[in-house]
Structures are given as structure tokens and as C-alpha cells.
Length: 347
Ligand code: ADP
Ligand code: MG
Image 1 (cartoon, protein in one colour):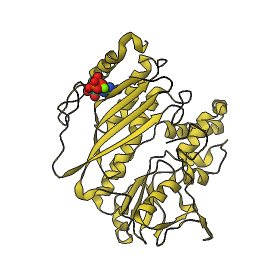
Image 2 (cartoon, rainbow, N blue to C red; image 1 turned 45 degrees about the horizontal axis):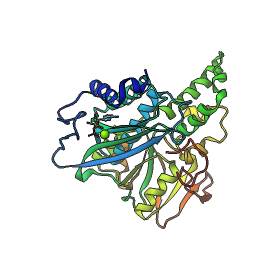
Image 3 (cartoon, protein in one colour; image 1 turned 180 degrees about the vertical axis):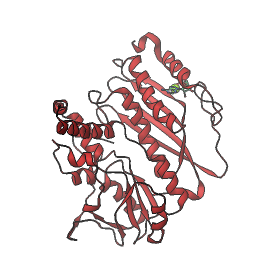
Image 4 (cartoon, rainbow, N blue to C red; image 1 turned 45 degrees about the vertical axis):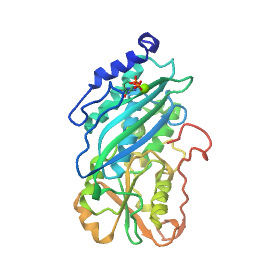
């Protein structure tokens, strides 16, 4: 069905019908001039916005609309997680070119709602307009966190240990594989080939449907053992750089301590080595955080999948250490919208 068959208000009505108009936390949701939300006493309101632009952040030849909806929610949920907060509600603004069908938009909202539902986040509004060329998605996520538990980028101190959740580099490798038109050819029949294609599928899935670490972020905030936190969206070197800059510190990272998934280590046909993806590949949406040494035992008791990768230092240098202890400068090599050439890898 074409968008001009139902028009702007027809589309909004469909969205409103599938998401409902009110809930306990949002007595007024989609359908009025603004949503009215309840904020719990003693909590700070968190607000974050992220845009996804066709040709910059995604390409409709390498993602399906449902995954795009999921990912649009994930990148915003991850920002709330990185503050130690609980996501509550969101607004979705879309600029839609005429070639996109109503079914495609319905798929987008299906993927979005699947992830929002897992976190009990209500869709409470947004905006809809036409676009001359590209599909543009802008999501605003609102959340809350007890005032004293907020985790920022500025709390790291020399001597703190640097940790990261999950594994790094999978998403960037997945992006490269999904762009490589030949990856389908590798889905073969032998056991070895099957293992290989399972690894490829895992990496692609990590790129298309990243899992925001909301529960873990909340646990870190509650535990009181984390001094600074950020989510890894632009790449470890870039995001660590943000923490160091805002905390006024440096960092030593051990290249051989970086958590690499089995899929990344075993995937064939990649242009870089696994550590290269882990250092500069973005969009993993893992949590990077620092822990004062006397709180490390408490952190380990949380039993969260996190790996120590280095230590916060005095001064401002970011260094990468190898197994022999030799170091080289770690340069921020993540994506910069106005400095990085080319298209399609922006975040
Ligand atoms: P207004 O003219 O006041 O901007 P709109 O007609 O744009 O109102 O929107 C009507 C209602 O639908 C509002 O509650 C708005 O938040 C919601 N809405 C509009 N577009 C979207 C969308 N893409 N997703 C979710 N809610 C939307
Ligand atoms: Mg409007």
C-alpha cells in the first residue's frame, strides 16, 4: 500500500491504534498535541535523541525494516543504559520518501516495538513528514534514574580499572560482511562450512540487531562500584577518549585483554584482524566503564559478562600495550560525521 493512499493522518492513526494511547506512566500518549508523563519522585529525568539517516547510518539494501526499527530503539536505549537509567518512553520522528510503502513502515514499527516491549518502554508520540529523497529516523528516548546513582563520563580517576561488557568488534565485522555480496556463497553444506556461516550470521545479527545493556547499566548504577560509564557506539578508541577527556585522565589498554567473540575470531573473509575491529569498529553498544580498585571485588560479585581491558592513568595519553608491555599511542579512530570520508558507516 502506498503512503498517499492513507495519507499522513492515516499513517499516524495506524501507529496510534497499534501502540495505544495511554498507560499508567503516560496518561496521555499518542493523539494529543503533547504527551503527559509521570515522573517518579527522587528521580532525574534522562533525555536523549539519536538520528538514523539513510545512506549515512543504514542502507535499505543491507537491512530489513524490522531490524532497522529494532536498531533505532537499541541505539537510544543504550544511551539511557550508559547513564545507569531505566528507559520509560520514547518519541519517533520520521521523514519518509514516497517510495517507502505502508507495509515497510509497519515492519519498522514491529521491530521497534519488539525491543521497546522487552524494556516496557511506551511510544508516546512523534512526528511524521515527507522526504524528497532519504528515509530519516529520529528517536527521542526518555528515562529516569535515582539522582545519586547517575553515571557520567567524568568520574574516572587515575588507578581505576577499565572494563567493558560483552565482546567488541562484532558489529563492524558484521557490517563489512553484510556489504560483501558474496557472503551468501559461503553458506555451504559441510560441518566446517556450516560453522563458518553460523559465525557470519552471528556477526551480521550483532550489527543489525544490537542488544542494549540496559539491565547491566542499571545494576552497575545500583552497586555503587562504577566511577564512569559510556556506551561503545563510535568505537572503543573514540569512546574511551571521551571518558578520558571529560575525566581529565589518560588510559593504558592491553590489546591482548580485549574481549573478542568466537565468531569474530573464526570469521573468514574479513579485511582486518579481530583486534582492529575491536579497537575502532563502532556500534557494539556495549558498556565501557571504570571501577576504583577497592570496588573490583564487589563488581565481580555482580557476575556480569565484563572484561578488564586496562587502567586509568595520570596525564592525558591513551596508549595501547602489547603482550611484551611495549606501548604505542591509541588514536581515536571511530567515525566522525564531518571528518570520515565515504558513506554508510556513520553513527
Ligand atoms: P501536531 O500537529 O500537534 O504536531 P501531529 O498530527 O503531528 O500533531 O501528531 C498527532 C499525534 O501523533 C501526536 O500525539 C504525535 O505525537 C503523534 N505522532 C505523530 N507522528 C508519529 C510517529 N511517527 N510515531 C508516533 N507518534 C506520532
Ligand atoms: Mg506533528
